[in-house]
Length: 132
Image 1 (cartoon, rainbow, N blue to C red):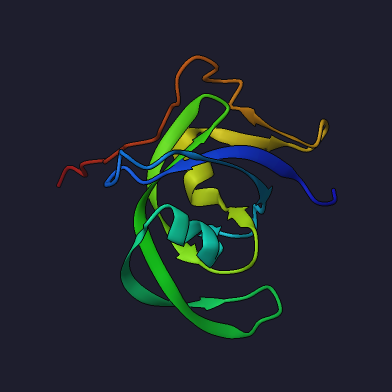
Image 2 (cartoon, rainbow, N blue to C red):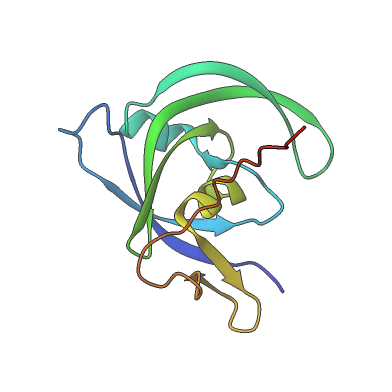
């Protein structure tokens, strides 16, 4: 399918006096997390929460900062998440995509809102009780 990018707005909800940051992100359905480069983490004054070991696309493992909170907005939808401080550009993984209920349409090669919930994000929150 090739590389796919989308526009995001990032903000630090713990520092509402800071300006939002509009950026373009690489969309990677093989990645889990939001990844932001250090210069964006500095601009948003993100606080390091912990260190995490991540496996990169080439199989190497790397220790990096996991910071947050960060507000992510895409296509009029938003979520609050943590971010790995990693790389030289923003990468949007599937955890924030699922949280915002957006998806990749392979036919159009675009990020879109879920057509099954076009007006508000939908989420799955089921718990099944098993009778004895």
